[in-house]
Length: 200
Image 1 (cartoon, helix red, strand yellow):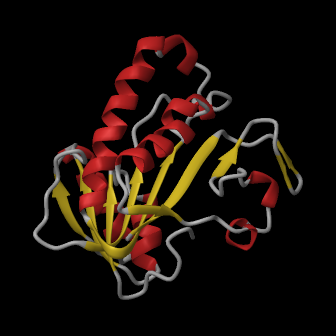
Image 2 (cartoon, one colour):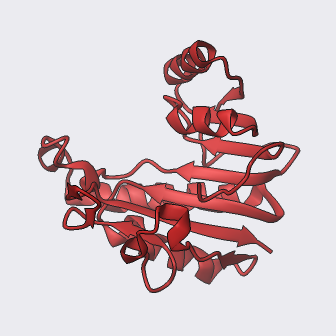
Protein backbone atom coordinates (compact mmCIF):
# COMPACT_ATOMS: atom_id res chain seq x y z
CA UNK A 1 0.00 0.00 0.00
CA UNK A 2 2.77 2.45 0.81
CA UNK A 3 4.13 2.12 -2.72
CA UNK A 4 0.77 3.21 -4.17
CA UNK A 5 -0.40 2.09 -7.59
CA UNK A 6 2.43 -0.08 -8.92
CA UNK A 7 0.70 -1.31 -12.08
CA UNK A 8 3.21 -1.24 -14.92
CA UNK A 9 6.04 0.05 -12.72
CA UNK A 10 9.49 -1.49 -12.32
CA UNK A 11 9.57 -2.61 -8.69
CA UNK A 12 12.43 -4.20 -6.75
CA UNK A 13 11.71 -6.37 -3.71
CA UNK A 14 14.90 -6.79 -1.71
CA UNK A 15 15.04 -9.60 0.89
CA UNK A 16 12.02 -10.98 -0.94
CA UNK A 17 11.68 -14.62 0.15
CA UNK A 18 9.43 -16.40 0.92
CA UNK A 19 7.41 -14.06 -1.27
CA UNK A 20 4.25 -12.79 0.40
CA UNK A 21 4.93 -9.15 -0.46
CA UNK A 22 6.35 -10.17 -3.84
CA UNK A 23 3.07 -11.90 -4.66
CA UNK A 24 1.01 -8.88 -3.62
CA UNK A 25 3.11 -6.56 -5.78
CA UNK A 26 2.95 -8.93 -8.76
CA UNK A 27 -0.81 -9.29 -8.34
CA UNK A 28 -1.06 -5.48 -8.39
CA UNK A 29 0.57 -5.42 -11.82
CA UNK A 30 4.16 -4.49 -11.01
CA UNK A 31 7.04 -5.58 -13.25
CA UNK A 32 8.87 -7.21 -10.42
CA UNK A 33 12.44 -8.16 -9.59
CA UNK A 34 12.77 -10.22 -6.40
CA UNK A 35 16.17 -10.52 -4.69
CA UNK A 36 17.19 -12.80 -1.85
CA UNK A 37 20.54 -14.13 -0.67
CA UNK A 38 19.21 -17.69 -0.19
CA UNK A 39 18.76 -19.90 -3.27
CA UNK A 40 16.53 -22.26 -1.29
CA UNK A 41 14.27 -19.46 -0.12
CA UNK A 42 14.08 -18.01 -3.64
CA UNK A 43 13.06 -21.43 -4.93
CA UNK A 44 10.23 -21.39 -2.41
CA UNK A 45 9.27 -17.90 -3.61
CA UNK A 46 9.16 -19.12 -7.20
CA UNK A 47 6.98 -22.06 -6.16
CA UNK A 48 4.58 -19.69 -4.40
CA UNK A 49 4.38 -17.40 -7.41
CA UNK A 50 3.80 -20.35 -9.74
CA UNK A 51 1.02 -21.66 -7.49
CA UNK A 52 -0.64 -18.23 -7.63
CA UNK A 53 -0.19 -17.80 -11.38
CA UNK A 54 2.15 -14.83 -10.91
CA UNK A 55 5.66 -14.09 -12.11
CA UNK A 56 8.76 -12.12 -11.19
CA UNK A 57 12.40 -12.05 -12.19
CA UNK A 58 14.39 -13.58 -9.36
CA UNK A 59 18.03 -12.93 -8.46
CA UNK A 60 20.20 -14.62 -5.84
CA UNK A 61 22.18 -11.78 -4.27
CA UNK A 62 22.81 -9.96 -1.01
CA UNK A 63 20.64 -6.86 -0.68
CA UNK A 64 23.61 -4.76 0.40
CA UNK A 65 25.58 -5.79 -2.73
CA UNK A 66 22.95 -6.20 -5.46
CA UNK A 67 23.69 -4.11 -8.56
CA UNK A 68 21.57 -3.56 -11.64
CA UNK A 69 22.14 -1.58 -14.82
CA UNK A 70 18.59 -0.21 -14.61
CA UNK A 71 17.00 1.70 -11.75
CA UNK A 72 13.53 1.11 -10.35
CA UNK A 73 10.37 3.15 -9.85
CA UNK A 74 10.01 1.66 -6.38
CA UNK A 75 12.14 -0.40 -4.01
CA UNK A 76 10.84 -2.33 -1.00
CA UNK A 77 13.39 -3.23 1.67
CA UNK A 78 11.88 -5.43 4.37
CA UNK A 79 15.17 -5.72 6.20
CA UNK A 80 16.40 -8.53 8.44
CA UNK A 81 16.04 -7.40 12.04
CA UNK A 82 15.91 -8.52 15.66
CA UNK A 83 12.19 -9.39 15.24
CA UNK A 84 11.41 -8.08 18.71
CA UNK A 85 8.05 -6.88 17.41
CA UNK A 86 6.77 -10.42 16.94
CA UNK A 87 7.75 -11.89 20.31
CA UNK A 88 4.16 -12.76 21.23
CA UNK A 89 4.03 -15.15 18.27
CA UNK A 90 7.65 -16.24 18.64
CA UNK A 91 8.38 -16.31 22.38
CA UNK A 92 11.83 -17.82 21.86
CA UNK A 93 13.17 -14.57 20.34
CA UNK A 94 14.29 -12.98 23.65
CA UNK A 95 16.26 -16.15 24.42
CA UNK A 96 17.93 -16.26 20.99
CA UNK A 97 18.85 -12.60 20.51
CA UNK A 98 21.71 -10.86 22.29
CA UNK A 99 22.24 -7.11 22.76
CA UNK A 100 25.20 -7.21 20.37
CA UNK A 101 22.90 -8.59 17.66
CA UNK A 102 21.17 -5.19 17.49
CA UNK A 103 24.44 -3.42 16.65
CA UNK A 104 25.30 -5.99 14.01
CA UNK A 105 21.86 -5.81 12.41
CA UNK A 106 21.87 -2.01 12.54
CA UNK A 107 25.12 -1.96 10.56
CA UNK A 108 23.77 -4.43 7.99
CA UNK A 109 20.51 -2.49 7.60
CA UNK A 110 22.43 0.73 6.98
CA UNK A 111 24.45 -0.95 4.21
CA UNK A 112 21.26 -2.33 2.68
CA UNK A 113 19.59 1.08 2.80
CA UNK A 114 22.57 2.84 1.22
CA UNK A 115 22.57 0.32 -1.62
CA UNK A 116 18.78 0.45 -2.01
CA UNK A 117 18.93 4.22 -2.54
CA UNK A 118 21.23 3.74 -5.53
CA UNK A 119 18.64 1.43 -7.11
CA UNK A 120 15.77 3.96 -7.00
CA UNK A 121 15.43 6.24 -10.00
CA UNK A 122 14.91 9.99 -9.36
CA UNK A 123 11.29 10.55 -8.37
CA UNK A 124 10.93 6.93 -7.26
CA UNK A 125 10.00 5.57 -3.85
CA UNK A 126 11.86 3.56 -1.25
CA UNK A 127 9.92 1.83 1.53
CA UNK A 128 11.96 0.50 4.46
CA UNK A 129 10.36 -1.69 7.11
CA UNK A 130 11.23 -4.00 10.00
CA UNK A 131 9.29 -6.07 12.54
CA UNK A 132 11.39 -4.61 15.34
CA UNK A 133 10.52 -2.53 18.39
CA UNK A 134 14.07 -1.19 18.57
CA UNK A 135 14.47 2.46 17.46
CA UNK A 136 17.98 1.62 16.25
CA UNK A 137 16.38 -0.56 13.58
CA UNK A 138 13.57 1.85 12.75
CA UNK A 139 13.32 5.56 13.52
CA UNK A 140 17.03 6.06 14.18
CA UNK A 141 17.96 4.14 11.04
CA UNK A 142 15.89 6.48 8.86
CA UNK A 143 17.14 9.63 10.59
CA UNK A 144 20.73 8.49 10.04
CA UNK A 145 20.03 7.75 6.37
CA UNK A 146 18.47 11.18 5.80
CA UNK A 147 21.41 12.75 7.59
CA UNK A 148 23.99 11.19 5.30
CA UNK A 149 22.06 11.34 2.02
CA UNK A 150 20.51 14.60 0.81
CA UNK A 151 18.99 12.96 -2.28
CA UNK A 152 16.05 11.68 -0.21
CA UNK A 153 12.91 13.19 1.29
CA UNK A 154 10.41 11.54 3.62
CA UNK A 155 6.95 11.01 2.15
CA UNK A 156 4.46 11.20 4.99
CA UNK A 157 2.19 8.20 5.49
CA UNK A 158 -1.47 9.21 5.61
CA UNK A 159 -4.25 7.54 7.63
CA UNK A 160 -6.29 6.42 4.57
CA UNK A 161 -3.28 4.39 3.40
CA UNK A 162 -3.37 2.32 6.58
CA UNK A 163 -7.09 1.85 7.06
CA UNK A 164 -7.65 5.20 8.76
CA UNK A 165 -5.49 4.28 11.76
CA UNK A 166 -3.89 7.69 12.23
CA UNK A 167 -2.78 6.82 15.77
CA UNK A 168 -0.20 4.47 14.23
CA UNK A 169 1.58 7.32 12.43
CA UNK A 170 4.51 8.99 14.19
CA UNK A 171 4.86 12.79 14.40
CA UNK A 172 7.44 12.56 11.58
CA UNK A 173 5.05 10.64 9.33
CA UNK A 174 6.32 7.07 9.64
CA UNK A 175 4.32 3.98 10.61
CA UNK A 176 4.96 2.58 14.09
CA UNK A 177 2.82 -0.15 15.63
CA UNK A 178 3.27 -1.39 19.17
CA UNK A 179 1.86 -4.34 21.13
CA UNK A 180 -0.21 -1.88 23.19
CA UNK A 181 -2.05 -0.51 20.15
CA UNK A 182 -5.64 -1.32 19.34
CA UNK A 183 -6.92 -1.64 15.78
CA UNK A 184 -10.65 -2.29 15.43
CA UNK A 185 -11.62 -5.34 17.46
CA UNK A 186 -7.99 -6.45 17.73
CA UNK A 187 -6.29 -5.67 21.02
CA UNK A 188 -2.55 -5.71 20.67
CA UNK A 189 -0.58 -5.63 17.43
CA UNK A 190 2.80 -6.85 16.34
CA UNK A 191 5.53 -4.25 16.64
CA UNK A 192 6.34 -2.88 13.20
CA UNK A 193 8.06 0.11 11.64
CA UNK A 194 7.85 1.48 8.09
CA UNK A 195 9.11 4.65 6.45
CA UNK A 196 8.61 5.92 2.90
CA UNK A 197 11.19 8.04 1.12
CA UNK A 198 11.38 9.66 -2.31
CA UNK A 199 14.57 9.91 -4.34
CA UNK A 200 14.98 13.51 -5.43
